[in-house]
Length: 125
Image (cartoon, rainbow, N blue to C red):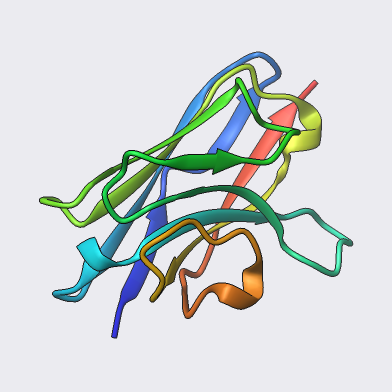
């Protein structure tokens, strides 16, 4: 069992930066690939932002955030991060951390087994 708690969301002006953190509990954190998803108001589905493998040396990003967002993880601290730079108003959403039992990258929400409660990110223009 893995429990996830996100933090670091907030209000930022366009062009600014935020760093989200996701703290995980559970002894097998390092065996899980992790993902960040987001869900904008009125959208039915959560959109993949990025995913990182268990070792932290392989990542995948949605085209909409590529070059602006960076995922990383510290398995010793049971924490995964999402550094968000050059934020745009269209990045406004609730951001969710997720863990999958897979060791490799997972790009769809259905592949994830555990979810955090979400943290709001609002980017003003």
